[in-house]
Image (cartoon, rainbow, N blue to C red; front, side, top):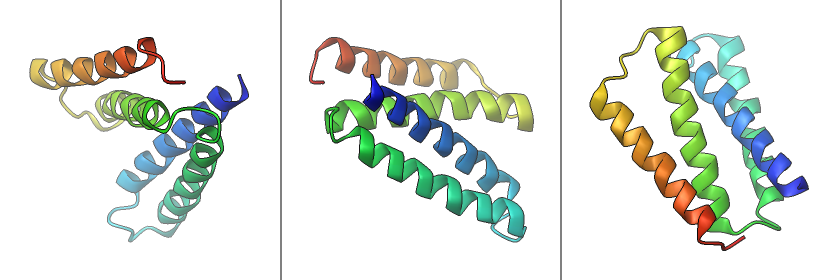
Length: 107
């Protein structure tokens, strides 16, 4: 259970870092820019802890897949970015791929 909590923490940090990156205005705003660095450092740290026990492929697929899906939702909700049918289908395929990796074992 602990590696999955570490992976969830890595994902949360990645989401904070990506959102802060959007707010940093190409790293011209110091507080969001600093948040990017700290959040991504935390994300990689917790991901490295998680992959000690989880399969590298599964952990990375979950980390990136959940990150993509939730980042798209954050973009739509906070920044009014469009989520059209094609984008939603792509996100759905990513989520399906992560589910298949998990159902196939490997962790």
